[in-house]
Amino acid sequence: MDKLSNENRILKERFDKLEERCQRWITDEQVYLLRRIEQLEDENHRLHENYQAYQKQSEKCIGSVTDLIIKALFTQEVRY
Image 1 (cartoon, rainbow, N blue to C red):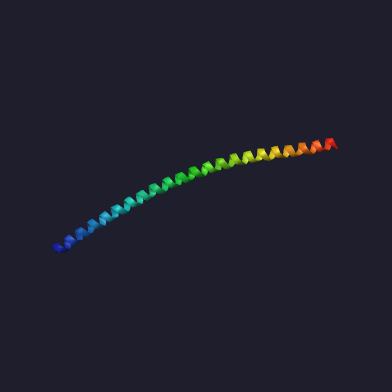
Image 2: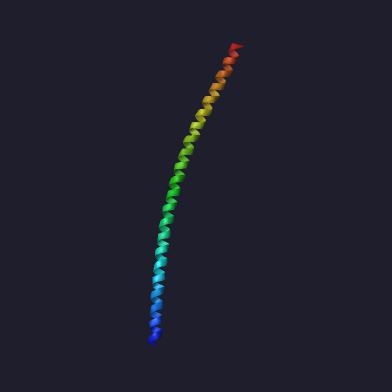
């Protein structure tokens, strides 16, 4: 009986250690995933801001090119 009791105690200790390691792993994984999510959200926000800035610059550039084309056409009409 003592042998079974001792084996039972040892198995319970091993199980408790395994459960503790599993909980630590879960906690570490949660922390990692939350940090990664935060990094990705920050990067997404930065990329969105860059895209908006690029779009504004693109619109200004298109407007400037359009103005130049109109001026060039107007200048040609005036000459002829």
